[in-house]
Structure formats: C-alpha cells, structure tokens
Image 1 (spheres, chains in turn red, green, blue, cyan):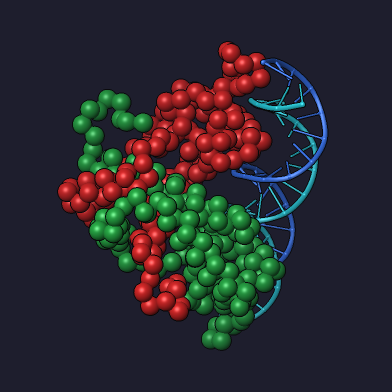
Image 2 (cartoon, rainbow over the protein chains, first blue to last red):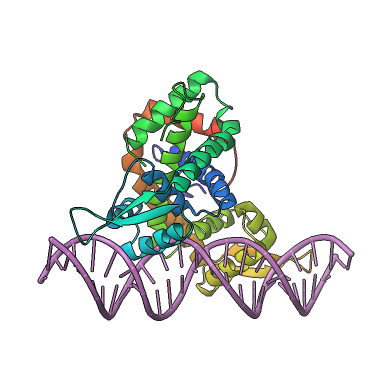
Length: 147
Length: 147
DNA sequence: TATTGTTATACTCTATAACTATA
DNA sequence: TATAGTTATAGAGTATAACAATA
C-alpha cells in the first residue's frame, strides 16, 4: 500500500512495513499457542508479568493499557481457573495484589518453551551472527523494557 | 523469565524475547491508532488486504486465520459503516467478493500515514544505516509476504 | 455431495457508568 | 474528596452448530 503520489518514500517507511508484518507474524504464533491453552493475548501478557512481580490490580491494568474493570473480569476468570490468586495488599487496605498460583507458574513455563519452539523455524532463517545483530537492533529500538 | 535450570540459553532465545516485545510495542501503537477510528486489529488487517485485492469471504477468513462466520460478522459491520462492500462473484455463484468503498480507501490511506507518524519516534532511535540493516534482517526473517 | 456464505447462539474481551470500601 | 476495586450493562470479536444456495 505505497503512498500513491510519492515516488520517494519517507525515511523508514519500508522499516515500518517490515515491523508491522513481523508483529503480525509473531503475534499470530503466540496467539495460536495461547488458543491451544484457551488463553487470550491479554491474559498471556498478564501471566508473563506475574512471573516475577506481584502487582496490584490497577498496576496491571495500566501496564496493559486496559481499564481496571476489564482487568477485574480478566483476573476473575483466571482465578476461577486456578491460574492466579488475589490477596489484600498489606500496606493499603484498598488495594489487591495479584500473583501466580503454582499451576500458573507451571503454565507460564510451558508457554514459554512452546513459544521458543514455535518461533525457532523462523529465527533459524538467520545464522547466529545475524540473529545477534537483529536482537541488538531490536533492543535498541524498543529500549530495555520489562514484560 | 529465563529458563530456571539452564544457564546456557538455547540459541535465539534472547531474540525470541526481543521479537515478542517488539510485537507487543508495535501492536500497541497500531491498536491505539485503530481505536481512535473505532477499528479492531482484525478489521485493520482486512482493510489493508483490500487495498490492492478483491478477495472472496473465505479467502479473507483463511488469510487472517478466522472462521468464515467470524468474517461474515466483521464484514457486515464494516459494510454497515460504509467502509467495504460485497458483490456476487462473476464466475462462482456461491462466492461473494469484498472490496473497499471510496470512503474505505481514504480511511486506509489515513491510517497508513498515521502509522508512519506514530512509529517514527521509535525508528528514529536508529540511524539510516541501521534502519536499513534492521529492515533487511526482518524481511529475511519473515520472507516476502503480502498483507 | 461438497463448497460458499449467512444466521443463531454463547462466551470472552472491552468500555462506560454506578457502586462500596478505604485513605 | 480521592483512590482501589467490583458489579452492572452493552457492544465487538470469536467459535460451534445449523441452515440455504450453488457447484
């Protein structure tokens, strides 16, 4: 879908296309893995965050860019399935902490392994040196963020 | 979330993390742009495909990995909004072709410009040479695919 | 009979609004 | 009064199942 009346594209235009296509491909892969476990992308992101953190509901919602009510429903369903649990925050009587159950921890570990396996055929199109170059470039692009 | 009992990660493990994080960041940006126009990611993908193609319903569904009934609803809502239209296929009396309306074409052009603008601050973290290197590596990774 | 598409139904995800409890 | 969280309600997105029309 090139700009119609512009024969000299803006700098980075092709890169944006490549980024978006890569995002679609990557998302499709992890979405498929999630679907096999009846997990939405949002819930997978939540579980990933809970791997090494114990946030409160509002923190989770902000991190994912969702409303707190949406997070309430998401966590309520995950709790019903035994993947996460809620407990009152020790310092603030209004707040609720969220954390993974043992079953949730096992699921995240399994998801992670399956993700590596599913994306392996794609990344193996590059040799080791190019993989490292790509990883370095991507990390410079997105910065060192967590979750 | 490193592999717990493995101090020497599998080849490409860090790259998978970087790819997934990049996908989340990129998806969040285009999702926000879509939300400003009341468009879901799925519908944006459909509109992107229709930019230069006139597929039938089943082709669209297969391309996005959705069921044909799901595509029926998606297209029905988009048609109601005047973004796309349906017409019987000339060769096969069972099939229905889908295509962009004039309004749909204008919307896709606008979305595309907004996507470039929204991702510009991110890609500008790399100089021109590194942008080209990253684009080349990504294209080798995902192949030359369309839509 | 097989394929294309739609309709019926149900559940998840998401948002807006209203509410309760705590600070 | 402001903040944290839940509940109520509604709409979009998705799937499974059943159906109609065409090949």
